[in-house]
Length: 447
Image (cartoon, rainbow, N blue to C red; front, side, top):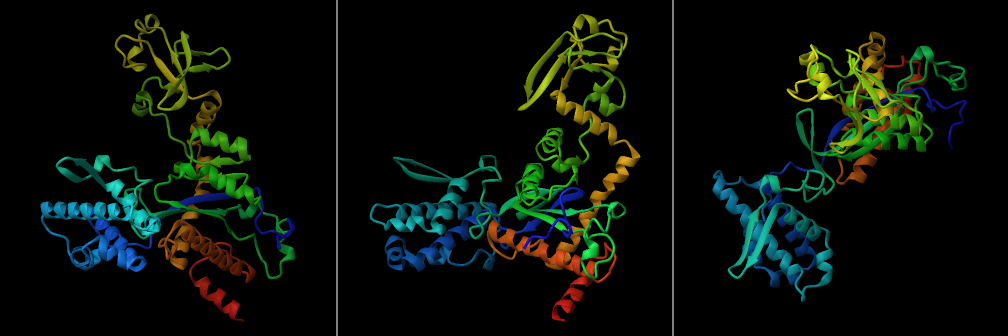
């Protein structure tokens, strides 16, 4: 039964913050040689269980069992690079031979539908080349540059949703979790309006509760999840008025889009101007030029106006390109502070008006002390991630597959919210939501 607006602890509006962290899949990290060997071994195991009679006729079971039977973690690979390469090619040839046998006309059609066979086929397409000529079939390993993108590349024959991820210089195999939580300022809360007077034992401002959990594979960037996170919150009528995010979630386009589509203000840093003048801190960067969007014209610091204004697409993004006449720029006495071009005039590249104005405003605010102090609210999500890891082990998946891992994360979030509500109901300060509260929750449930 849903809580009424008068008694809800978390409601739409207010403030929330979101951040992500890595999640290790419940599988071993495998190099490419181990991945090939373990994939082939698990496929043979599956076929030995599903169709033992067919398998004994399709392959030399004794020879293949000696070569492919042991698990990869039970032996050491050859020390020589050439021997490791030869072993990888042996795996490749055996895998293709097994796939040919499974897809032969006289083989049972249902064999090729086995999940292990499907994984073997995908893994071999991703890691091997095979050419067939009059001299026979030649198998080669794909070079690193020829491998599929990380989002498509399988990392384990046991968990086909796990992917290789990279964040802040750390590699891992598995997933990412995005955690959103309320972070209203206690000074701004009205206990009566928040329904606290109607909840026995509740003291002080409402606790900071987790409002959303999203689990993705490890290759999905934070920026790709900005809109999905807001869709998730909107579906439960929990959209905040202000959402605190780090720069990985934000861009000028997303700031504009989230405000327009959800009515949410993103409080987040944006990338600063990267022009040579801005990086050097000298000369005339873009902010030194006055832009008249209605007249489609720019004016330089010396009062000269542009002669070219044209919409364009730069690196797949909509932009506006503005140019000044070279005859105007060439004799300019401050030319060396404005452009590095030896013969041409100054060129400016802007984003579309709505996006550029939001970007300029955000960059201007980033230098404000009050704005920086306000953005400090986002840092509290790091404490929540620490609590989630310490209490529930959220950074290590216990199950295989994205759906089960996400369900585990949902249960973990519920547990953290119960810990925080228990602290609130028992009159503890708002932010004392440490690991010791787990024991207190167990005692209260037992009573």
